[in-house]
Length: 501
Image (cartoon, one colour):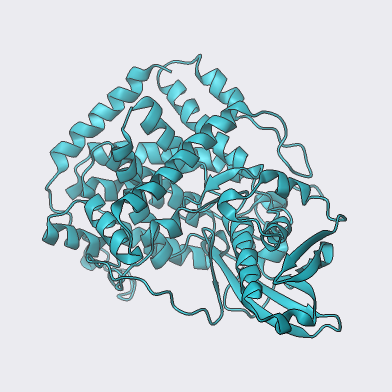
């Protein structure tokens, strides 16, 4: 790759950012009078309120693929249920004979393709997400092999009958519901918890006490409010995010930076590993890796074609690794785990941005992720793939823009452009596997993010109509309008047309 192409792009971006700094960035809408034929109730009600207390450790989680909602969250849920059982008095476990995991919604519909069963067994066996051994996950493919584990001094045998593929249509409050049960030999339920996988590796359970967290010194619930905070305080995006993180989690800056470094190291290592590996990915049909081949071909190209293929190869490398169960970062999900690392790799290896600039980029991306998570969703089961690849592209655009010197206003425009042009994207994984179309979508998400960052830093932001709050609301509205079969069920779209009758 001709490195001058990357450096020229970065130079232009930096110049654009310098020209745009300090311009007013008040969100504006098109006056209703411009559209007299529209009903008066077709309008934007204004940015959401509230205070976001999400942490970077919530958003950026490290764990095995292929899916944050179907693999990582179930692993975390099983580990949490194991800890819960460990906390019970011995007499409560005395009559227990089995542990059962009942899956509902798309967890049941596509869980096998996402290795939900393996993740649950791994968590019950004592594996933790950040250190989960891929060899353990691979070994759990043998469903006939019994596994024995001790919980609270009680021995349990885990196997095929531990997992109950329950109803796809159900009345639980969240699509991806998982009910964990401790059962006696006669079938009586001795203890249970109703869990919800809410996207991006997040989970909750019914009756869970509210976690005590500190109050942010710079409260905001929307991008509009965040820009007001920045204007009044005179602080930069990364200063606000860092000070909020420290107050919310009760940690110092070194602790925050340590997690950001873990995230960056995992992302960069994922690209390097994926560019070395070849062969077939785990699937019931022949699915070949292609990141290494595309990367090798790209090195023989020149100019823009090389850039397109290199960025694509980086995203494919991480996405293929994720599909193989390698460790990856929820950014915001594992299904979209390749998009941000591709541009992090560009920042590090091509644009030579230092670790401080890259941390700041991650904080800018986190701001976008928080807003999407809290004001809409990052779960394919809720809003389709626009909530996964779309948000990942938006986060990556913000990261690249801010790490290369963009203003807060230009960073927002970059995120807005990237998200806007993923609106309406359905989630239709073939066979429930995070392969088709997920892997290639990560590459296109990265390319859109790169272009969005350049466009935002080379236009006049005060002349840009769309703002992030409005596009996030559009994503939520669009996602809710998608038929259920186009939200991670794998029974429509490509999930249907790619399978012969």
